[in-house]
Structure formats: C-alpha cells, structure tokens
Image 1 (cartoon, protein in one colour):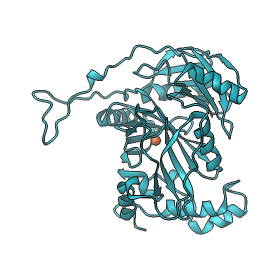
Image 2: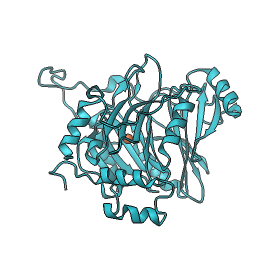
Image 3: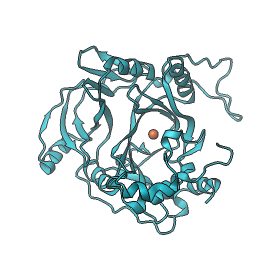
Image 4: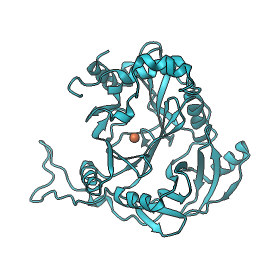
Length: 378
Ligand SMILES: [Fe+2]
C-alpha cells in the first residue's frame, strides 16, 4: 500500500464503504449521553514549571493556591485544567458535563456511585466514575459558567479569491499565547482497546465518528463524539488507540484559527518550550493541529477548524497507515513512531514487552505505523 493511496482512501471517507474484512464495533445502549468535555486533572512534582507552561500555552490561572491550581480559557467554562502538587507526575483524570440533572441520578443508580457536591471552580454536582484502567471520569452538572474573556466578534474577516471580506484593513496577529476556548479532546492508548471503547460508549454515550482498522479488519483507533441528538458535536472528544501500555497520548484545546495556532506556536517557541508535531491538518476530524510537550513530557495540542456533526452521521471505517493521521504537514516525530524494526515485534512480545496487548494486533499495528507516508517526507 502506498502512502498516497492510503490518503485518498481516507479522503473518500465513509461514503466509499468499509474496507474489506472490517469487524464493525457492536452498538451499546448507553447509561447516559454526556454533553461536552469539561476539564483535565494532572499531578505535577514541579507545579511552578507546569504553571509557566500552562500560561504560555494560553491558559489563565484562576487563583493561587499552594497545592492545587486551576486554569481557565477565554470561553465560558469555569475552568479547564486542574494541577495538584504531588511527588510523581501523573494524569489523574478528566471531567465531562452531563446534559441533564437526572443523568447524575441515573449514573448513580447504575454504578452505585454517590451524587456529591463538586468542590471545584463553578461548583455543581458530580458523580465520579473510574474507567477500566483507573482514570477518574467526573460527570458534572450545574456548574456556573464565567464571562468570556474574548468574544467571537474579535475573529477577523478572511479574504478568499472570490470573496474579499477584509477591505482597507490588515492582519497583524499579536505574538501572544493562543487564546483557548475549550477543552476539545483527550486521546488514550489502551492494551484492551475494545474494553475501553465499550466502556466509554456505555457510560458517556459517545458515538464512534471514525474508526481505523488494521489489516485483518480489527478496530485499533476510534475517534468518538458526544451524542447531542440534532445539535452538532466535535468529531471527537474521546479517542482511543489500541497499543501496548495504558496511558494518555495527548490533551487538546480549541483555539480560534490558523493565525492563533501560528502565533501561539511562535510564542511557545520564544519561551523555549519543546515542540512535538505540526503545524499540520488532520484527516479524521480535519483540525489544524500543533503539539507541544509540557515540562513532564505530556503532549498538549492546540487545534482549530475541526469538524462537527450531529448524531445522524454513521461511523466511518478506514484502514490505518502512518500517513492517514494527517492531510498535510511533517511526518510523525520520532517519538510517535515505533522505536524498533518490524522484525523485532515477535521477540518483544515474547519477552513480555507489550504486556497484555495481543501479538497479532501488535504485528499489524506496527506494520501500519511503519508504512512510509508521503514519498517527499524523510
Ligand atoms: Fe488531537
């Protein structure tokens, strides 16, 4: 399979039908259907270094506290990031907003978890769930929003060859952190992909927007959106990749546009932070993207201009190859590529290096990630 062939396969999309031999994801009757992403929670040994990164990334500290700090964006969410001081760096969990107050009662009954006051900025009530690998998922309802720091009216008009919307006026984006409007999505890696996907479909009601499969048709990467009925939701808010070790792959926040992304990139570079991947445009979800590493090595993405869809769009199935992950931009950084040649997969598995990740799936995943993308990339 050539890289270019793979790209056109993705671009032909779900309407082209499933690739051969796909094993479709089995539908799940959800307990509730969550509304949106709310926040992420981290533990950091060096909370001051993390503070500097988050400000440069575009977040605004809410209040100074010795051991727990909260950061908001420019939108109406009361906060987007919580960082607590601790001995070991860790991703602790995340929060989502429920659609209805009754959803917390429904979850509480189904899971035997209490409805309790949420002692976080914005308040409200929450039910705390724990996903299959121990990540806490706080389902929150009734949080009080905040006044936005920026309004949509500040978006400038764009000139195209056919529509000159900006006349007698220039573009001078400031060298400043990217304005962040919301938490967009979280991406996890899980050895037991199917169990985690089923859990998120059942407990939060997410819909797989697009699923990528390995050679034998086994699903390996799922991009899931919230089910808001006729109201559009982001193409993905939770994404899961099958892989050897459970962990967080990245968290992603929405900024305005390609200028915000580019100037935010320059600003982070000016402050000496570690760039990871981008700027480019994704295929599944279509976002402009730019990835940075925080002081503990976790990946933080700025994105803009992502797809949104209501609940009538069917799940798309696509073959996975390295080049299918983005439409334009540089190849994956070394740290996102398999750190060993394909011929070593069996040996690594035999020595326990992939944990409970199945050998046959490992063979096919790493084969897909070894497929060279565009010929002009290194
Ligand atoms: Fe992302």
